[in-house]
Length: 608
Image 1: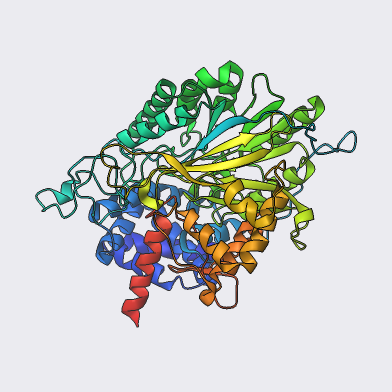
Image 2: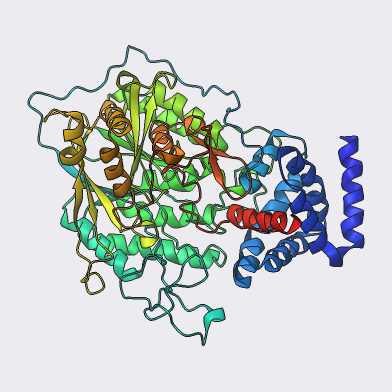
C-alpha cells in the first residue's frame, strides 16, 4: 500500500505539472498496457489523472481518441465525455492491486480475463419434498400462443434521404459533420442494414405481432438506438415513454417487458445501490414502472420501481409466474460494477429476489418463466453472477420451465447442464432461448412465436417470423412471414416425436446433429441472421466446434470465448478460431471497449 501511495503521489505531481501534456502522458499509459500486469500498473497513473478532475480526465481520453483518427470527433468527445467520469470514479474507488482492478482491466482492455468465478453460495431453501418436473396430460390440451420481441433499437432521428453509408456506428440520420456532403446511399423509408430501426419499421413489427393474436407478449429489452456517444437522460426517457405508448396502442395482448442495457444514460449505466446516491438510475425504473403499470398492475410495477427494474407476476388464469430480471447488474460493460474493492455477489439483491419468488412459486405449485435481456452464457456476462444464477437454476430446475433473452440480436440458444463436464441430453436441465432483433444492423428484422403447452408451459413449437430487407417491396410495406418452423426444420433432424416439447434434451440432441452434419450446421448459421448478414463459419478455424461449445454454455465460464486483450476476442481452442457465439459487442456496436482497443492497436502499430 505504501508503494502504491508514493506512486500515486508521484503520478499526481507529474500530471499536475504537465497538465497541458495530459494527452501525451495518457498515450504512454495506454501504449504500455500490453498484458494484465501492465494494466494493473497503469491503474496508478490513471488514478493520478482522475484526481485532476472529471473534465481533465475525460478530455485527455478525447484528445488521444482524436489523435488516433479512428473515430469521428463527435464520437470521441461524446463517448469519453459520457463514460470518462465513470472510469475516473472507478479508479479512484479501488486499489490498483485488487480483484476489482483486474475486472476493470478486463472490461476496458480485455486483459486479466478470468473464467473462474469467485466462490459464493447463493442462500437457497432446500425443497420440502423431492421436486419433480411437470407432466402433461395425455392427450395434451390445445397450446396457446406467445410472441417474443427484442432489441427494437428505434431511431427517432432516422431521416429518409439521409446518408445510409456513413462513418459512424449507425447511419440514416442528419449528422452535423456530414452537412453538405453528397449522398452516396440514401436512407429508405423502412430501414437499412447500416441503420437502426425507423419508427415506421417498429410500427410494422407491432402490427405483425398483433396479427398472431397472442395470449401475451414478452419483450426482452433495448429500446434506445445505438448512438451511444450522444445519448441524454431526456432523450432516453422519451424513447422509453414513446415505445411504451406505441406498444399499448398497437398490441391488444398483455405485454411483459424487461430492461435492456441500452435503456439508460450513459449506455450500460446501472449503478449499484452501494454507489454514491447522486449517481443513480432510478429515473429509468420510475419511467418503466409508470409505463408498464397498464400491463403489470400496481404490485409488479412497484417492484420495478423498488427492485432495480426486476419484477414477478402471475399470468392471469394460468398456473404460471413470470420473473423479469434486470441482467445489467451482471453485465461486464456496466462500468459502475467496478467502483468498490468489496466483493458484491448479489448486486441490488436480484438473486435474493429471484430465490424468494421461485420459492413462493414452488410452494404454490406454480411454474415459472424467467426473462431478461442478456443471456447468461454470453462472454459479456460476468462469470461470477452467471455461476450464481446457475445455482438458482439447478435448485429450481423443475419449477423453471422457460428462459428467454435477447441482446445478441441473433437467433440462438444456450443449454444448461446439471454437469457441465458431462454434456449429454440426460443432463440438459434448461435452455435459454434468444430472440433476434428488429434492428436491421444484424440481419433481417425478426421475432419469435411460441406455441405453449397450457399445463407444463413448455414450448411445443417455435416459428421465426421475419421481413426481408432485400425484398423489392420492403421499402413500400414490409411483409412479415415465417422464416422457418423449428419443429419442421430441426425436429426432423433429431426425430422429435409429434407430441414432444422442445425440451433442453431436444436442443442438446440438435447440437449433436450440428457436430456431425455440416449441412445442418450451415443451415443454423444462415438462420442466425435470418439470411440477412451471413458470416462464414466452417471447420477451418474451429468456428463450428466453438459455436457448438457456446450453444452448450448457459453459464459463461463454460463458453469458448476468452478475451486476450487488444482488438480481437479470441477462442479457448488451440487454433484460436472464432465462433458465431462471439458477440460480446454485437449489441454495443462501437463501444468504449472497442474504441480503446482500436486506439491501442494503432499505438502498437506505430511503435513497430
